[in-house]
Structure formats: C-alpha cells, structure tokens
Length: 283
Image (cartoon, rainbow, N blue to C red; front, side):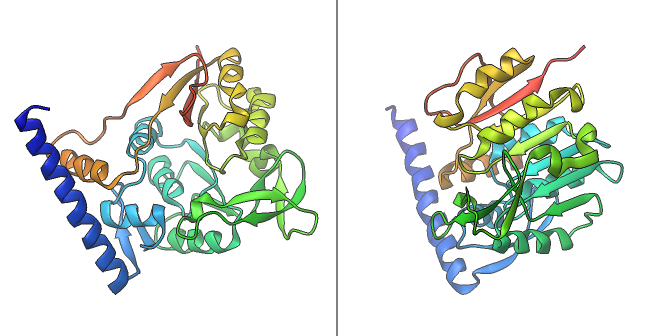
C-alpha cells in the first residue's frame, strides 16, 4: 500500500476507534434520546440497539437504500413498509409522499411496534396507517423469535397456533390501498418468500411503476429470476453497516452530493448478496 494510502487508512481507523468510544460513553450516560434523520424526521432512539444506534449518531441507516428510496418516491405515492422496525423508512416515506400519499407500516413485534408508534407520534404522520400484524402466506397466528439482544431488527416470526399476533396475507393487509402502493420495502428476516410470492400473484393489482426493495435469502433466491420473468429489472444493492463507513459517508455528505447510491443490475441471485431492488418496466 502506498504511504499516502497507509496514512489515510490509519486516520480512518483512528476515527473509527474514537467514534466507538464516544458512542459507548454516550450510550452509558444517556441510553435513549431523540435524534434527527437526514430527511428531518424526529426519532426516539435506544443507543443499545444496532439500528437505532446508527440513526442516533449519524442520522441515517442503510445509505444506499435510503438515497435510492428518496430518489424514487414522490408526492402522492403509496409505500408499504413490511417489517417497519421503529419506523425509519415509514417516516422517510411519509415525508416524501406528502398529504396526498399513503404509507402502510407493518411491524409484528408488539414491543417494537410500541416504539414505532412513539416515533410516528413525534412527527406529522397523518398519512401513515400502522398495523401490529405479520405478513404471512395464509391467515394465522404467529409468535416472535427473538434475535440478538441488541438488534430488534433481527427478530423473526414463526407460525404458532398458540401465538397471539395475527398474520395476514399482504393483499389483506393492504386492502383497498393495494392499487395505490407503488413502492414496497420488505425486511422480515428470512420470511420474505410468501410476501414476494403474494406480490407476483397480484402484480396486476399494483401500479405499473411498482418498485420492491427486499432482503432475499438463500431460501427465497428463486424470486430474483421470477421477478425478472414478470417484467421487472433486478438490482443488487449493498448496505454497509461498519462505523468507519458511516463516518466517511457522513463526511462526504457534508462536503458533496449526498444523494448518490450504488446499485448494480443483475439477472440472477448473487451468493452472499441479500439486498435487492425490483423495478417494474412499464410503457
């Protein structure tokens, strides 16, 4: 590595260490506090949580998907947030689609749903319909399988006859709004298959300019090619979560164009690549 490159690497790694110390200390002193996102939404963030910690200290989560979503949504659009977590993307969409648009925000975990409702109440979100349900293949009840202790977004759902949380097919969740929803984000920890299938089964009920941004696991990898055959372009989108990446991106946002994003068109599932965007081709 050239000397200049080594020096830059040293600076970034040093900043990474100091930022981690800073975040750790503030988390101890004040584990929960309000934060502002890059799209001017207020959020109450628990700094012990993986997702909320990045929102609190950097005002953003998943740079590429955030800027892609901001670039595509417009006034009057409809957005479905399947696996809304604490509401980051629901709030982003609410800001972008405006009073004439609609956001359907779906979160299965009751504890996380309570935090979602809190964040919605901190903002002007009269265009958001929040539902404490799970998106499933058939009507059922589900239970929550807890993920890692400090990442509520890693929780998963499991069909459970003794569960107390309702599960409904996507078309039942969206109801009469299905014809207005032209952007769907899915992040439900490996349970995306039934939702992706539901979208394809009812694709003609959605607007012609439908966009789907979803995690795609190995178990649902066939949906990349299924969406392509259904008339969508498929793109791989990388989301990086390391602190040094957030530091560099935050710096570049202050000195340059913050709206860039990196997506690559693909015609197949890429092993190790779990985030995809499907954009419907229309006349």
